[in-house]
Length: 65
Image (tube, rainbow, N blue to C red; front, side, top):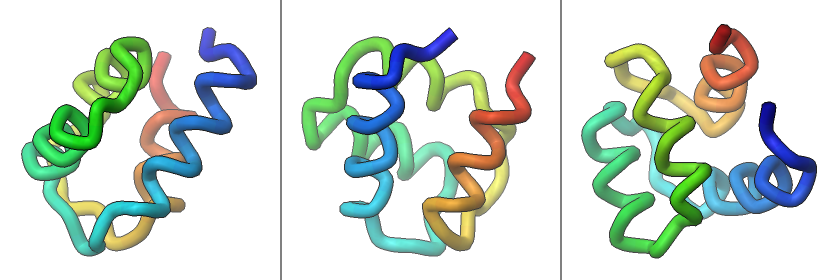
């Protein structure tokens, strides 16, 4: 599971991105912004789709098994 620190960093980082965004662009932007490796691994597991807002990304992460 994600640590609280990772979760906080992830939420802060997701708010910096421009939406809507595809998974591919989400990962590309995350890498360019130097997101933590744990965060990148989590983002790579979410479904391929367009995300309308950071809350949609957070939801997709919450639904990961």
